[in-house]
Length: 362
Image 1 (spheres, helix red, strand yellow):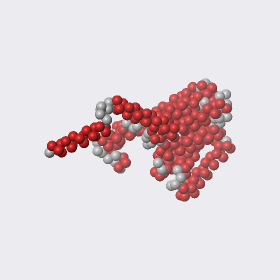
Image 2: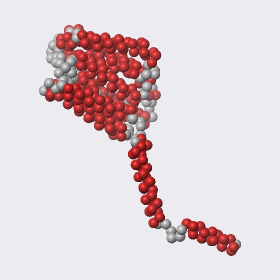
Image 3: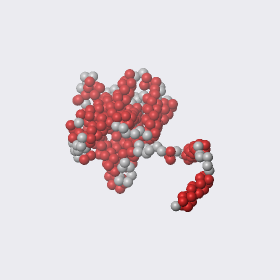
Image 4: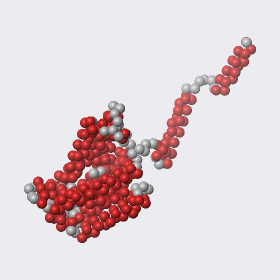
């Protein structure tokens, strides 16, 4: 059974897809609203957040952005309860696309050619991933979630993640953390894969709670909640460290690639999302993900690079030079048609004779 065919028969899949897309729209719009509110404070001469001020707390646009962020995160949380994590996590890249497009429209931030190509690639890759989305094995209760967590493959994966994260934090971090961007970003990505699994389990617990089942008495739900809080705390801490040391345009695309790869690997091991997929859907999913990666890279890595003719390949620059030469020759030919009747040498001799005549008269 192919991923796209299986997805087409489940209404829950489309609900999860809709929630993931809505999450990207709200989160992308929230950045623009908060930025617009902060810019309004700057125009009024009030202390901005970067200067230690808190006047943004009285700005309704900032609160609107915060509300949009909360709605987007809630929609993203709910999407994991209905759609595969392999689909929901990569679609989070669309929030970057929404933010870039809205910023160019409402904040007058220029979106260069690289950014426009990156937006198109992100849309194309997301479409391909939706078409070839995997069919995860049904996990409809906390009991089945507990069985999944006891799987030897997932236990080995979780132990490897924890051990590697501890080595990165306590061994590699003090030595290479300030010189290599991968150290702290790898910590965020590895721990993030476990946090997504916790979110998936809590989403299932909420579905059972709304169905009237005594979920609050189940210890697994509380264990998942505690693990989620710990994982998110570690993610925020080390992501902030990476952003403080390195450029945002470098950290963001690397973090997206590593985090999404870790989540897709964890979901494939825990939920067996790839087990029933045929080869063309596997290739389609990987191709869509790589296309999104390319789009995000173009959006971030070349954000501040102006597209000038000097960036063109040499053969195109040579073509421009030839064209400019032909234009100049045409201009010279046109100026020759309007030149005076007397040649330049005759004009010089005539002016010299006039000067001599004036000198003699004096």
